[in-house]
Length: 253
Image (cartoon, rainbow, N blue to C red; front, side, top):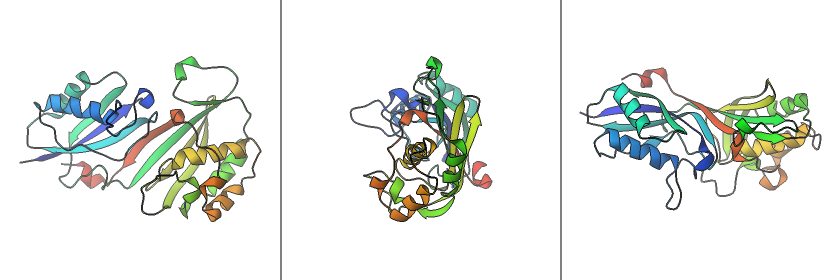
């Protein structure tokens, strides 16, 4: 009898080509598959992630699911996989889930965080993990602009070319800017995201923060539905997939 498993994985995406396996690049998915296969005696079940993360993007709580008829203990799966993974990828949790659990289709929401630091110094221990800018930013104006995005909108102006989503309409449940020590954290929670959507929002938000655009510009961007009118795509280094939400009843086996 097959068991459905849920994995919660953390990784630093700095040296990988992204989550998805690529023919000419080192991917996180390939590393996780190999580690899982080692724990399962060479078996290679279908490994499903909640979604892809791009090259350089990090995850605090990526979620994956797989099914296997092999009997293993939760701790042995977690610890066994970690013994075969590099130090910048780690399995935080491995446990049986409800048979209907599916890491992608069962997800009800995701929280993304983008980390910014304003200043002229260079925090070496955060290299590749934050976006550093030397320009002062108007935090209240940025907060005002973000509030415009909350709700259900057409996010074409923040959608990257080549995005495969059938519709550009998405719902943001919250869009917050938090000051955490010497950093600004932009946190977006929604039911789904378009390709580069968070990074494109951040790039436009920096324009508002620098005073180049008024907060109301975000309303214009939503109405224009034109990616060329928005700001640049922010670098991947500051972006984190924080968590993925699921119905509680699907997390129990």
